[in-house]
Image (cartoon, rainbow, N blue to C red; front, side, top):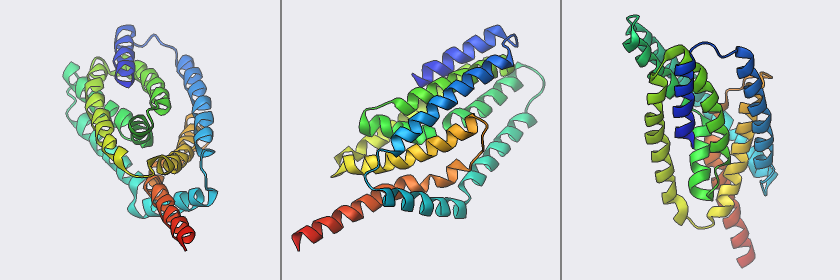
Amino acid sequence: MNVASVAVGGTVGTLLGTVIPNAWQTAAMTGIGLFTLVLGIKMALASKNVLELVAAISIGGVIGTALHISGGIEGFAEWAQTLAASRVTGGATGRFSEAIVTCTILFCVGPMTLLGCLQDSLEDKSDILYVKSAMDGISAIFFGAALGVGVVATAVILLVIQGSLSLLARRLRSVKNLTAYIEEASAVGGLLIVSIAFGLLQIRQFPTADYLPAILLAPIFAAVQHRFRRNRDAA
């Protein structure tokens, strides 16, 4: 779905050029932002333990801030775009290179990529990837209009990266009490989705990537609580 949305969006944008009004993009992205907000809230409310959720998002945010995750991603994006720009010679080749770098960062780097692949592999749900597909497809139309056919080629890179993440995540299916762990990780992911929605709606931009460690902390806290309850019941 996600690969097809980028391929189709990039193709449509390349064929139509610059005739697509910016107002249409704004209207479409606002609609997606509203849906993303509702999806994030729904996921966050699925948590069985609010204290675990608060602890995971707070401590995870501190860890991510200390590690400068958002700054690192932004720095990489700037470096990659600068590298692409330095190779632009004004022809189609330069635009192709710029499209590959820019769209790979946009479509493959971010919380929704990781969360979507985890949800798809572990819960057999694709809600996040559906939203991401819509966002990527609309973005691909306008990038295709500006940068050309290189945007379509990015779909192949997307397939490799997200496909690899999904396949690797399937190895976690054998973990005991997986459902409970997934619920807490998904709840934290829901808060990150809400953060992304605020950005899409132009309410406020948060350093969402800094909170990615919280996704790992949530199931750890759930496992600790599960063991504590088991030991207490045994006593």
